[in-house]
Amino acid sequence: MEKMLISKMLVSGTNRRIHTVEPHVGMSIAGLVPDGRVLVNRAREEARGFKQNFGIKVSGDVLTERLAGYMHTFSLYEWLRPFGCGIMLAVWGEEGPELYAVEPDGSGYKYYGCALGKAKQQAKTMIEALNLEELTCRQAVEEIAKMLHQVHDELKDKSFELEMSWICEESGRKHVLVPAEVLTQAETAAKAALESDSDDDDDDDEVAMAD
Image (cartoon, rainbow, N blue to C red; front, side):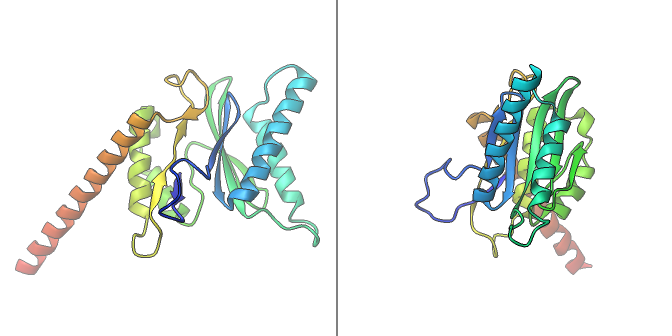
């Protein structure tokens, strides 16, 4: 998750865009953070109510369907304002990790990999080029860090900090933030890879000029 730093005085880790709904469910917000917090609270209510009524933890598809319906309702009436954000849900289900996304209009889908936000199309193209079935979680963290740095426009956008979470065997099948040392290592590797790619491009330009 690319979190813009609106001020140099902002304390690191504040204004979070990633939240835990239940131990087996995490949610990330792309868009207006206040709108996203409303959806986080709604998701927690839905998950809590489902467990009270049925005695089991809510599944990813059920929670996604309920949140999608809730978001869609706000696009139907003129006295309501549609949500200004999209969300992604990371869930550990019966068959393992699952990923869902809900657009602001209430369209919800299940994905192998997806992206939300202003550079989502560029990021989706990069995700499609990866062999997701063979990536470890640590490798995926590094690839995502590289993508976020690559799509970030330093001339137009503010500086940002990476905020990442995972739900995998290494995390005990629970949604938690990626450990700081893993995130730092991934970001360092991503920046080094981008600098290497930039140097290669410069070399190609020099060869072209020599020709």
